[in-house]
Length: 181
Image 1 (tube, rainbow, N blue to C red):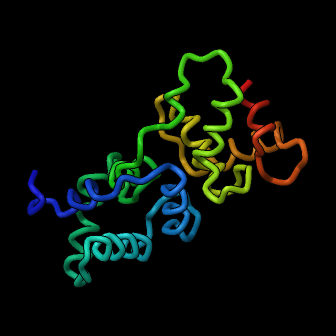
Image 2: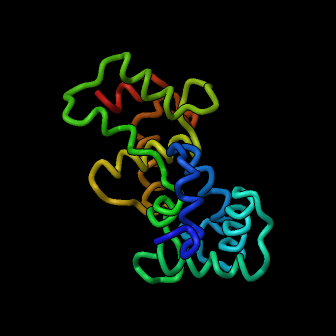
Image 3: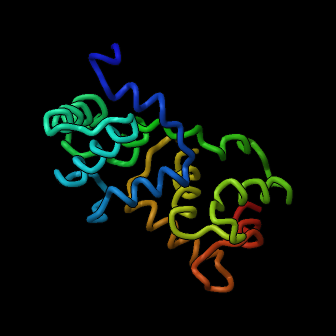
C-alpha cells in the first residue's frame, strides 16, 4: 500500500516512540479514561495532531479520512474504537524493552538500574503514573498479549500494594529490585 493510498503510513514510519511516551500519548487522548479512543472528539484530536506532526493543518475532510483509516486499518476487532494495542500499531511503539531480560533467573543490580533508567523519564529515581503503566504494559506484553487500560491500572495497583514498601505511590529502584528478584 502506498503513502497515497494510506496517508497513515507516513505517520507510522515517522513516529518511533518509547513505551513511556506511548502511555503519555494514550493518557492525553483517552480523555474520558474509558480505556479506548472511542469518542469523536478523541479520534478527531488524534487525527488533527497526526496531521500537524506531518506538517499540515488538516481540513475536515482530511480528518474524517484519517478517522476512517484508523477504523479500517487499525481497528483489528471492528468495534469502532481504538484500544491500546491498536494505537500502538498506528504509532509504532518501540520493541518491548523487557524482552532483553527474557530467560533470566534474576537481574543484576546494573540491569535493574538500566531498567529503572529506561522507564524513569522524569529522573526522580522511581516509577509512577505513566512510567509505571508503561513498565506494567511491557511486563504483560512479555506474555504475548496486549492488556487493556483497566488491566494496566489493576496490575499497577497490585504491584504498588505488594512492593511499594514506603507507600508513596511509586516503585523506587530498591522496590523494583524486590519485584524482579
